[in-house]
Amino acid sequence: MTKTVSQYRPSVWFLTVFSMFFGRGILYASWTSRGPDVRDTLGVSIGDMGVIATVFAAGAIIGVIFSGAIVERYGSRFLAIGTYIVMPLSLIGAIVGLQTQSMFATAVALFFFGLPFGAADYVSNIEASELDRASVKSKLPMLHGGYSIGVLIGALLTGLLILAQIPVEVQLVATAVLIGGWTLYRVAGLPPHHGKHPDHEPGAKPVRVTQTPAGRRRTILISMIAFVFVFAEGAAAIFIPLALTEAGRSPAEAAFAYTLYSLGMALSRVVGGRIVDRIGRRAVVLYSSLLCAIGVGLFSFVPFAPVEYVAVLFWGVGGSLTIAMSVSSVSDNKATLTKAQSTLWTWVYFANLGVGPVLGGIALVTGIFGAFLVPVILLVGAASISSVTRPDPEVART
Image 1 (tube, one colour):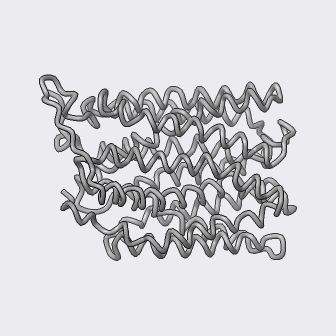
Image 2 (cartoon, rainbow, N blue to C red):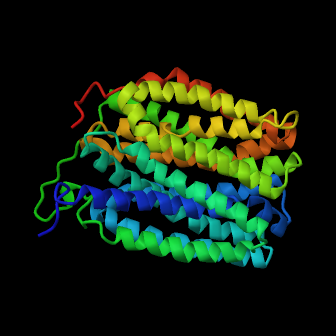
């Protein structure tokens, strides 16, 4: 007999979903933390690195757009298996671009890395939101912590490998094989019916529930908040190492700073469930927005003072919980969960798409540290609409 959600052991389910987030995080960090090495190998500018990041985000957006329909028809396991096969292979493919010093080949590989990355993000959060709904206490922050822990470990290992003078190609192959293999093993155990819409069950009569105008407006506002925080997170992943080397820090020091950023994010997510249960989603979003804005603003003073380590900690802690709160908020209504999450993740990856060219383009005029004013303004704006993350007034969360 096929397992139902209630029959699927919570501890096994948690480990699987956690592994999905963790695997994606360490694969991503293994690439982004070597940003200075990639730039030097390809012989490109910070603006060109922004273009490569944009190509990655474009692939992720396409992956998100089609993920909802795939999960509804074939289930979470089908999509998860596909993503954790293609992601590691695409990361290995990026080595071709580095070895041939071809920006074009590297960008193509990053597009096909982004395509399953976005889909994996979507399916991970579908599983996470259902697990969170089935739990008495908030699980989403800790599950999102899996991604942060993956990024943290990836960044820490990168710093050590740089000091040991291990080539970036060796790191990418080893990470892709080991992490990709483990995550694939975990997702293969998901029950095949998870995520499927009842309309696609044998003999089912199609019944579609659509959002009300108020529900759509709420989803868009929450998606705007998610957009802001992913923009700030993308700015960290792409530009913290590059900006610090530009300011005269060594590649190892830059990698360490990104490790501290990831540490702040990871630790906050580990304890985040308790924080959410105590003060509620809206307060978490409000305080996180302000703290993150302080961190990014402080980082912009790096050329004038050695404040980067304090700044990245504030940046990481402030940016840690709001994506989870956005996912939780749009998932209040189970009947419209997949559609609402499709909207949210489309906004999220448009943020990823925009962060590279926007900040890279502004940096050409103002310098990279002047460009950080953009996420500061956006974060203050997110704080001003944080009340939208209160429980959906149209539905009791079940």
